[in-house]
Length: 310
Picture 1 (cartoon, rainbow, N blue to C red):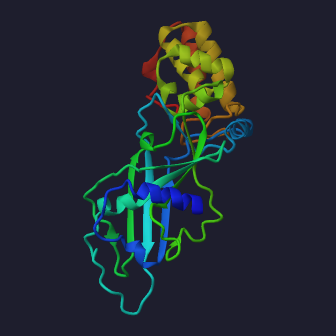
Picture 2 (cartoon, rainbow, N blue to C red; picture 1 turned 30 degrees about the vertical axis):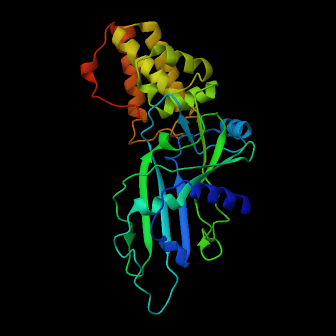
Picture 3 (tube, helix red, strand yellow; picture 1 turned 60 degrees about the vertical axis):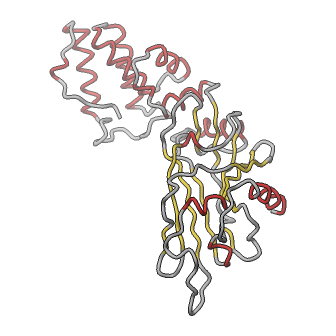
């Protein structure tokens, strides 16, 4: 902790000078949290999770893809709970404390899983004019969201733990994140796809699997032959092109994957699952569409209501 405080002292000299001291100088309890977007590495079968854990040192909660404008929302939250006194004084900040006044007193602490090295970097500012909310007990709360690709971690393909720390030494008077010993900071990686598993996670996370780039779908199926999204999209494409061999192959492979739960990366692994399209009616529709091409000889989309796979 002393090393962190020395580093934070250096950061504090670089931030903007604020005339008055922040509210958490008076003691009390300070809680901070920093999150990437929702888990984008799940669902993940045990062997894939094990592979990622061994590769990065810990299983990454979120992967930021370098070549994608990641608009998924990361978030940060800061809460300060004032120490209890019978007649609390009226502090200078009242109800007018703005985030731009408090922002210089916080930074992101990023710790490399591989080396243990730490980086302290300025956090995205967000809305500078926003007033930090205050309740009737004098406690303050602030949170805001920003795009995940603004998280200031290196793009070196290694995993980093994320935390928020004060940039001034307040640990003697303030409890910082008490009772957090059981929690583990989020682990995030910024990288481009390098392995077939990376490509599948990228493919799935960026919704590229919904695109009509057949070369990408063929490549996915070369490594993951029962990946349902690619099977369905190729089946759908060849249905419109009225190619019997391909419709029969991809349609029946898709049914096989669906009914036998062969896609480890599907969001559901229980068949049938009414309500999300993966049910017996859906399977019968695929079989009927195969017959349209391979028996009747032509596509007949007018028979089928629009329906999304996911």
